[in-house]
Amino acid sequence: MSGIVTSNVFKASGVIAATPGGLDWSSAVITGSTLSAETGRGYFINTTSNICTITLPASPAIGDQIVFADYARTWATNNVIIDSNGNNFQGDPDTYTVDYDTAGQSLNIVYSDATKGWIPVSDDAVTEAPVAPTIQKAIFAFGTVSGSAVNTKNLINSSGVVSGDTSSSGTARFNMQAATYGGDKAIFAFGATSGLAAKNMSNLVSNEGVVASDTTGVGTARYILGAASYGTDKAIFAYGSTAGDAYVSMSNLVSNQGVVATDVTGVGQAREELDGCSYGDGQAIFGYGMNNTAGDYQNVTNKVNSSGVVASDTSGVGTARKDLMAVNYGDGTVGMFIFGEGSGGRKSIRNLVNNQGVVASDTSVTGTNTGAGASRYGGDKAIICFGRTASGGSGLTNGRILISNTGAVAGLVSGAGTAKSSGRAAGYSYSA
Image (cartoon, rainbow, N blue to C red; front, side):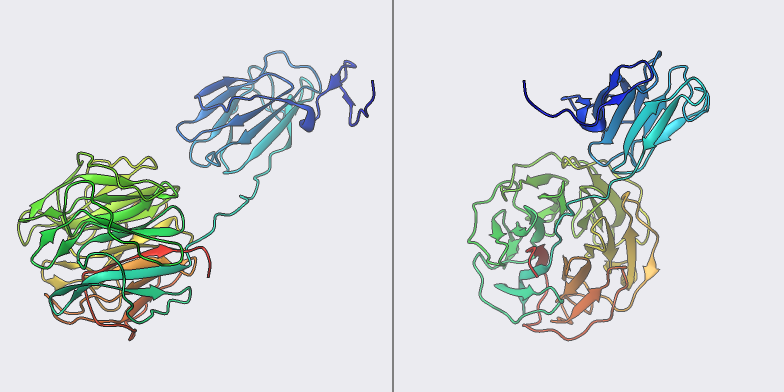
């Protein structure tokens, strides 16, 4: 037999103790709410769905070692509780509560003696690596000019500069929606052609900003709906209005390959002219809109979990309104609902969304815009471009409004391209 034996550590009993690299790691990721741990073992603990209570061995020997690791970086959401099973933990009796609640944490414990019991020899939080790439560019496409639908596009670079009009593929239409999918690509879907003929077609956008031709539609044709990214690489279209202003509460999921799924029966208030954005760790939220009558403005929200399931209504916060935008900024886990039109006219307000999906009360911002496109760009910033700066169909603009990585909203500045409204925007490309 040949080979080199290294790093052997003897316990007080004379038995060789396992070092961290020599531990017997459990092949199964622990997802349950309880675990009875064994000495000499390593465990990956996934608390995505629940807290995990870990019971340590009742009769450990000096030098016994166990390691636990945060498998999904969720200990900050659902913590790990250590039950030392009658033994001390860092000198404190088992009646004390021991929990670990830092994302990315790992815990390496060794049993010392009856006095101090189990002692952590390391309990560090590991910096998340690699860090996910961020969206650098955006695209605005489709819309209306002087009452006619167009299919032009305007690309937005990583500095927030909007290009002039260029021809694009796809049926000219307006009041569709757009979202990022597949990490670095975008999709435009649904909408209406001139004469309010509702459509259910879609157009994929590559990570180079190229718009593909129409894909035959799936799901109920409709327009003035909401869209958002969810689950890190997928998208969802939801709510809207069919021909004849029949408001719906259905949704359609988009895979990370850009495939639009069939209708899912809706949950929550049927409505139109709402919007959505992502938040937290792969969740999304839809908010606001209008239902049934011209003045029936809404401020309810509906959360979407990381599997794309839409939750029931949450009572609204802030001014009820329609025709607003929602967009992410900063590290991508937070967003905002901004502008819109409600009772008394157009609104110069925003409602921030934190990384738990909590919508804040109104705060005032400069300017106003409706019928615009909004997207993240430059890694951590957002842009609102084109749209209407006056009520109704008037006041078309080709301007842009930049949003900083802290959520500060700048004033409208002149942009490139033909003034238009009722198009939408979405982020694409990891490359600046």
